[in-house]
Image (tube, rainbow, N blue to C red; front, side, top):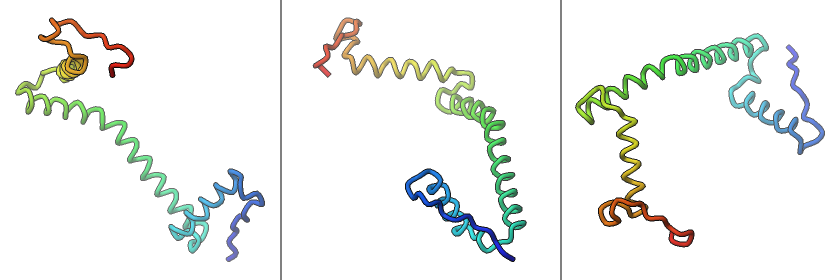
Length: 119
């Protein structure tokens, strides 16, 4: 059986050469060069189907799983499954900003405005 391989493009600096080089590297690395055409199509179809199933499951199941994980995290950290993680995160960020800007009890609760050269 004669297998058709595309010849390398004449211009070795163009995007066509880069695509050809990647295709040949993938074909030789995965052993597609030893397979017949129908076998290559079968393997690529199976790989595409598995990849599609994986990404569909990620986009369909991950949001529900993330909600479940956030409830469990709230339960273990705050001992309340209904605690708001966003409120805790906002408060943590505010404390960090206050600490960086030097506000708080020492500054009388007012934020200190820094000049451009003070950072």
